[in-house]
View 1 (cartoon, rainbow, N blue to C red):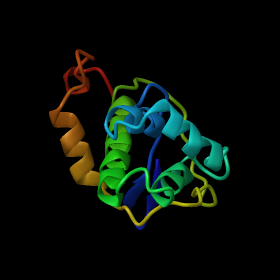
View 2 (tube, rainbow, N blue to C red):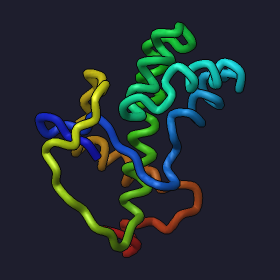
View 3 (cartoon, rainbow, N blue to C red):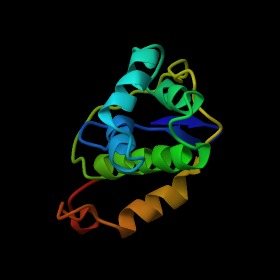
View 4 (cartoon, helix red, strand yellow):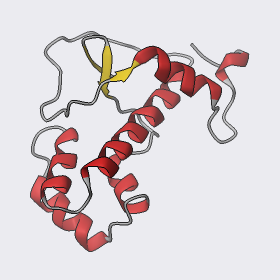
Length: 130
């Protein structure tokens, strides 16, 4: 989870939806068009930069890209809320480059995540997490 000024600007977690899959399914990008975007990105910078390449190439409108990034962040937070153990570290220098001016309210995001348990996973509010 990456924070700026107390707001979430990026998040990723194993088993959470990733931007490539969201682009394929929600933006309905073909594998060929995704391959072009991934080839241009080629792992340069953080995964957040992938969105920049996709938008610059005109593959996805800015509003849809923002919606997909928010969905990715919410998915990562939902996965993390289900964790019963883990290690965390604070590194103020680890903010990825290419982060857009997207800032999500932590409290609202947590409330949204808690009110919508994920597809049959244990409801963490009933003793399964945090």
